[in-house]
Amino acid sequence: MTFRFPPEFLWGAATSAYQVEGSLDVDGRGESVWDVFARQPGSIEGGGDGSLACDSYRRWADDVELIASLGLNAYRFSVGWSRVMPDGRGRVEKRGLDHYERFVDALLDRGVTPVLTLNHWDMPQALMSDGGWVARSSVDAFAEFTAAVADRLADRVEWWVTQNEPWIIALLGYQLGLHAPGVRDLGASVTAGHHVLLAHGAGADILRQYPRTRAGVALSLFPCDPATPSEEDAAAAWGSDGYVNRWYLDPLAGRGYPADMREHYERALGRPLTEIRDGDEDAIAGRSDFLGVNYYTRRVMAAAEPGKGRPFPWRVVGPSGDVARTDEGWEIAPGSFRDLLLRLHRDYGFPLLVTENGGVFGDAPLHDGRVRDVRRQAFLHSHVAAMGEAMAAGADVRGYLHWSLLDNFEWSLGYRPRFGLVHVDYPTGRRTVKDSGRLYARIVAAGTTDVEESEDA
Image (tube, rainbow, N blue to C red; front, top):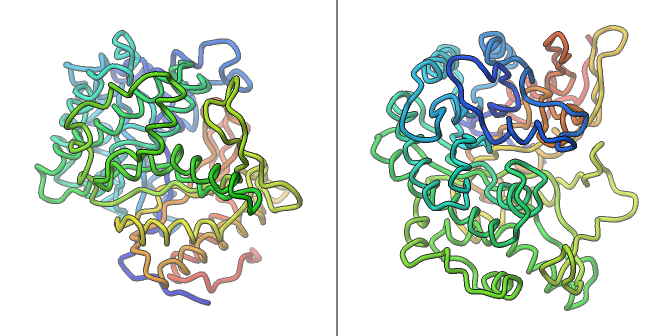
């Protein structure tokens, strides 16, 4: 089935500040938690950090031209929190805001809609003196940051993503310690995740003081399927869905935190969740004008006894067997993407913005300079088609922002995984549009997936 996307549909790509900007010591920027984490031996695969990345803080004008050359009408980027509030709170660094104002104006001059993310994981290190997201004061700090950025840009930026992937912040940053700030404590992860949602509510309240703004939060959503038809595995899949998806979706939708996951957490921690205070759920509910959807793959779940390293009665077991996978081993499952969008429409009713979708494929330039990344082309084509199927069935999807515009610094995995539509030669910064980027440009121009997956040049 060929679906024709509406003319106002947002077609774009996404990046984040720490992953592409570099220039960590420029224009008064303060340290972020990732600066400190990356210095810890063994924390980053290959020992890299974000000090150079894609050099986009200096090359921003080139990147704007690159976006425009692909015919994209939207671009998701993040404002470096440490560039605006070097000390976490209080002093506002004008030079950082000047940079983002120039960037936004350049996008608008080329007909590109800015989609601005406020927190894409790079909390100022100064806030760790209170515990980072574990401290309730982090909510007020985020509100100050939001106010500073909105005061400068809310007259021109309509789409605002307050928080990127609260579950990943809580899981990898505070439960498993695999991301900054490297905390390994289940209770801390629950508290941190809750404060991230509270901060979304506080930030959205500030943004709604401006007439043009729409505020949302981008969630990392993973459909959870049972490994077998057994009741035990079905319960495991539902539990995993509560842990990954419903724990964030339900309070955003005004339903409060799901009771079954409260019980799981309280059983695992051996205490009540006192960090969730009276009135907190009301301060989270009703603050989302849209939901940002970050989708990469699904989870296949089986029942398992809790034990060391497993606080809940389930485990990820697949998918197993001969399925299509990215170079990172993640299953390529566009049907699950379609079903997720339909579920979000049916069960929650949010307008949806696909804020991330992509895969790791390591293709490099060949002898003729072309990057013939045929697997990313197939990935992109199949997922955009799946999104079209969901929209044809009623899902209210307003845009699609591919992850990522550029190959970039992929957090604890360093520079090995390549997600970009554009290849980056890191030593020189040279950008080369991959064949997938060319395909995406043709899809955007046509407004449909009824285009060839490859072209000769």
